[in-house]
Image (cartoon, rainbow, N blue to C red; front, side, top):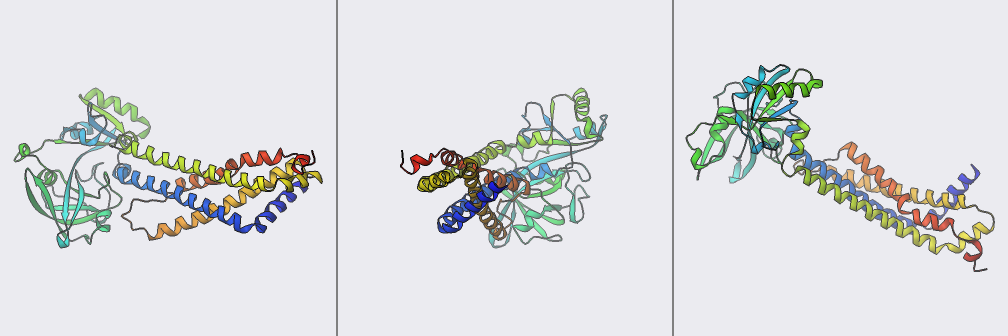
Length: 387
């Protein structure tokens, strides 16, 4: 215990005596912390923009066309398949999901690009309504908007919006009444609007060959099972009854969203390299510190200080400086997060930020490991040039 207090005293005393030097390295660590936290937040934000609709989907399984590789835009299944699936043992409900892209005309000739999703009200593909009411009539010119649409425009429940859609080589315009709002339904980076299948089929982007032809297919069927513990049993029941389909759980579907895995791998690689840079910076600084005070360490050892005291003092010093830098960086990240508009894809996830913070606190002792070992191995006679 005596050695512990002595180590703490020596570490703090040196930091206070050379506070300018240690403050500088703490600020460097703060900048590294800020960068790591923002990379983590960017990764979470980009991932969320890609997967939000699927994550919030009230479904356990998605049914794709066989050999579609679990990619929603590549899949086409018959619309009536949802009725068949509802009769499969273990299935509680099933609903269609049809996807396309369109644009909402805003004031001053501006447009807001959105994903338009065709769903069946009251089925797993349809989102929960947080304001207004749900879709009811199949043919009514009504629409649900995601709250991300409202954040990017002045549109609110009760308003009328104009949809611009490419029909062959021409633009067509459709007027819809906003009857409700949903929350958190970004789909492939775009805010979403939800309509019935009939309206979706009318307003979806069409090629010249599709003009005047009614679609009988949707992208996927969302399934809610009675008992989530029996997913594999339900899958087997479906495959026994239906041909030319493949089934994935929600996490598998998210992993196969085009670009999602590559995007997350890239962001995580950036975070790892930033941490490695932090290790090198901290290690280099404290190695120079030890080299500058070799004679002082030699004197301490000559008057009886043990290797344990010297090593522990170095560890405590590194931890104090690192913790101070991480605290500053974390505070800056929090302040900056308050000024970012909600449309910027940066989300400070508590768990991800905590993991990043712990990693940053660990890189201090890890980066200073070489300097600690060097300090412990210093020979008093050689340090004082007596041998």
